[in-house]
Length: 76
Image (tube, rainbow, N blue to C red; front, side, top):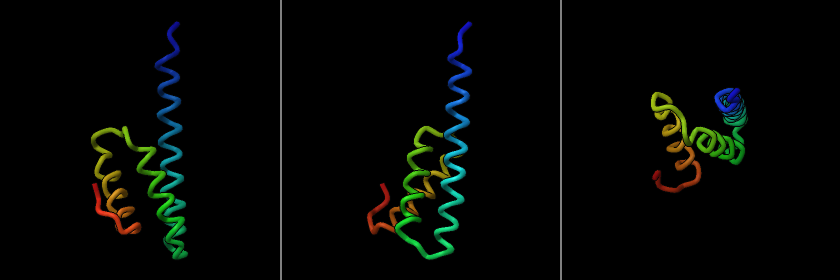
């Protein structure tokens, strides 16, 4: 029995869950005005979704742009 598809699905679910949690934490820190934590969670979100499905890429790119604005760096 090949368990690789099962393991891949587990990994995908963990990444999606972690990205969602990071997004909600970022929202909370944004409401509190904690820019450093906001930037940290944008960076985590972008990293977690580096290999996301094509339909989710606009969310990742939006997070990347916002992170660039927070850090004062040009978006790549």
